[in-house]
Length: 180
Image (cartoon, rainbow, N blue to C red; front, side, top):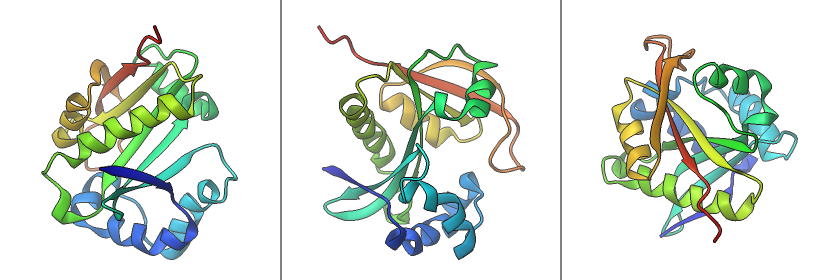
């Protein structure tokens, strides 16, 4: 079973190691200095910005990370996505990684995504949908989204995290289930 806990600064060494893993570095392309990790993940860990970062725990062992945020809290990102697909008021987005190499290729990504979506519906009753862009070249990522129940709703050019990638992204979405 996947459980969650918020990322805190004590987890930054673990996160740094994950970001250095070739399977993560290929798609995240993130600086891994202590300063860069603190700069980019510290504000959310300290509650100084609206994004939330969670460690995914499998049998109490950290195996991955999911970030979530309301698109309205990041207007530039909202507008970039809105150039491709309609973004409803109340939309949220996620980003994710599997940090432990021995856990890749086992269906964990789709399980993490589905678990976090269920948690979003509970934690954020105002959220109407979840919209997730993924670089088209990252087939494992967009297949995990599909297996977790998201559907492709558009495609278009967005700045890729890794400059070696083509700007083509697929955009996936899942709507809040009907309450009744």
